[in-house]
Amino acid sequence: MRPIPRPVRALLLKDLRVFWRDPAQWAQLLLLFGLLIIYISNLRNMPLNTGEPFWQSVISFFNMGATCFVMATLTSRFVFPMWSLEGQQFWVVGLAPLTRRQLLVQKFLGCSLGCILLGEAVMMYSNYMLRVPPLMLALSGVTVAVVSAGLVSLGLGLGAVFPNFREDNAARIANSAGGTLNIVLSLLYIGAIIAVQTYPIHALLTGKAPGWHALRGEILTAGLLFALINAIAIGVPLWLGLRAVDRMEL
Image (cartoon, rainbow, N blue to C red; front, side, top):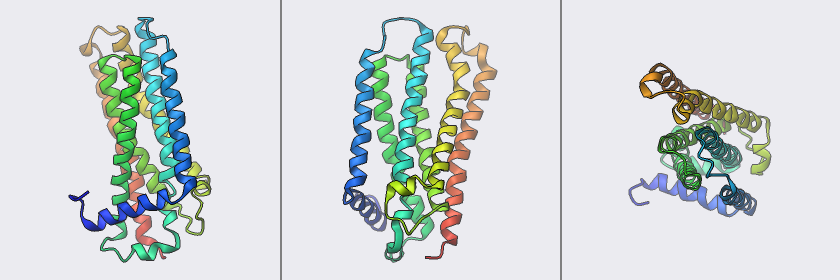
């Protein structure tokens, strides 16, 4: 962590220490990892030798959706409460040579990196287990990376818009009205991202389209919608969060 500026490094280490000092936090994280292990282990029982492109496509999209759903659960439970958990000790953080906006951006970058690494690890290993086509392998890798950043932005941004500094229980913060809104928007976001990809990619994987040239319009439209939805999901919540922290009186 030497290349990271000292104030940022200190705050990252602070967040990690606070997390590991709370048994409820890392116990639930271990539970989530346990569910991931069960999911990946059960992939061995999937009928991978059917050889039917239709089912390969369906299973590939289902796996991508399941991985994104896990990331949504992770960000809703652990990222959304982060700003609220600063609580009454926020004035101590305020002594650091960072503005509130820089602090929020630092949390966004750190959480995004962690979620991307975890999401890619799950996605790539599950794709290996399912022997998905190369096209789906590349698409799912890009999708999970971008969606991870979008989910972190949603969780952190809405967490700053709907803070609860009087509550020190992360689970209760995550189950608040703001937390419920966050998980609903996260699921809608994931559904929209997968929906815009489904038709052109499914047509290519199943052979319904003779090649890329036959779907140029659909692929271009899907690409533009993919970029637009992700730009909104990453940019808008983070912008709202930055505005909210500037207006906070602590």
